[in-house]
Each structure stands twice: as structure tokens, then as C-alpha cells.
Picture: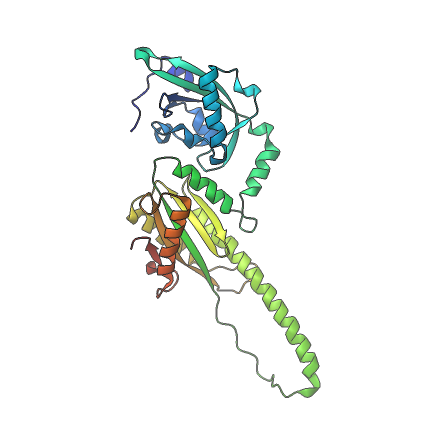
Length: 330
């Protein structure tokens, strides 16, 4: 249930503070955030008010956060938390942001009790840590999110009450037909047999290397095309091999998820020329979709549901066609 509007006597002052301010009610739900929170963490007030505070806590830090809250309740108002080890808050895009935090309790008219947290970003003091964190969550080949980034973003979304859509995308590279062998290469030329074997081996090895390069180039281009159509708050990640996942924040209607899938198919279908690849090669895909909470309540359940839909889409439908998309319960 959404918390009632919070009217603070100093709201105008809080709105102009350079640091982010979060006010939490007695039930642990967010009652107010100031505009600076969007600058720091990417969230808008309308997305957070009424949501549990855990939405702003990275999954890996929630146990530590709960212990701090319990200790705060037992020991009363602490000193400025900026003098303590730096904590992390959850950015809207899913990555953790290092912050120092100051806390206090506040009694409002009517006996209502709230807790006020002031968050100060300290990213500039922890650039090496942030760089290492980004590297750990980035796919080395394509430059988009990897399996870890996907898992963290999913856990962040699952901690809230907003629904979202998930597309599981299997790519297929469709190269042009190989050229026919040139005439005059009959196999009966005994005097060139040994040399031909050596040349054939070299050509075969070069062809395999070129194919690997083309596949890698195609994956990079596919990642760029998927990322180019994302909205703020969405995530594209490489699941592994030729599979990608696209998360659509707030997409809970099947028709909207289908529209997103069809746009992905259209973007991927354009001709491409990856480094080392053959001219005229194309990408195509099959896509399976799932919606939270309709098709699952956990990371594993949603990926499995989308995977089953992807398998159904693969059977009997040409890759890249509008029919190459299936929703989990179609």
C-alpha cells in the first residue's frame, strides 16, 4: 500500500540540498526523497515513494543493512555515518554507488515517527573500486552487462513492487552462400599433391580464424543494436554464447513486451559487416519473453520461463520473423 503524502516543515530546504535525502516511515517504506537523489542514484520520487527502503540497497549489502538498522534501533541516533566505512546504495540501473550516510529520527505532528537519511556520494574517492566493479559486471567481448550485472539488476527489480518484462534472445548469424570453387582444380595433379595439401591446411586454418573473428564481430554489433533501443533504466546483458537478455523496466503488458521484441528483431535484421566477416552477412534471432510477476517470482523462474518460450519460438519459425517471438504462456 502506498504511503500517505509526507508534509515536512523543512521540505523546501531539503529540496535544494546538494546531498540526497531519503525519509522512511515506521514500516520501512520511503515517504520522501529530494531531487538530489535522482542525480546520485537515478531514481525519481514517483518511483520510490511507498516502496520499501530495500529497493535502494544492493542485494549483496542487505544483510549488513538490516544489522545496521537493528543496531540503530537499539542504540539510538548514531554519529555521522560518514566517519564509518563507506556503504553502497543501489543505482536505478543496477550498479552499486559508494555513499556515506548520516541518520536521525524525527517526530512529526500527530505522533508520526520517521527516519531521515542523508546520502553523500563518495565515488570520486573510490574510483579504483568503481572501475573494478564495472569491469566485473561487463562482458569483455561486447562491452555490455554480463551474467553478474544481469543478476544484480534482476535482484534489484525483484526487491521492489514494480513489474518488468524480460526478453531472452538467441542470435543466429546468416552468412551469404559461399562462392563456388574455381575451375581447373582437378584432384589428379600428382606433382602438386603435397603442396596442395599444405596450402589447403593453411587456407582451412585461416578460414576458421576468420569465422571466429566474424562471430565475435557479429556479437559486438548485436550488442550495440540491442543497447541502442533501450530506455533509461533498461538493461541489455550477454547471458553467454549467442544469447542475450533485455530487461524492460515497468513493462508488464504482453502487447508492450511483444512490441519491444519486434523492434529488437527489426534492428538485428539489418545487414552487417563485422571485422573479418563476409559482406552481406545478416543477424537474425528468436526471442522468448516473460513478465514479472506473471511468469515467475525469482530470477531463476523468470529466466527459465523465457527459455521455454524461446525453445517454442525456435521450432518451425524462421529466425527474425515476427512469429519468431513467443511469450511464456502463449
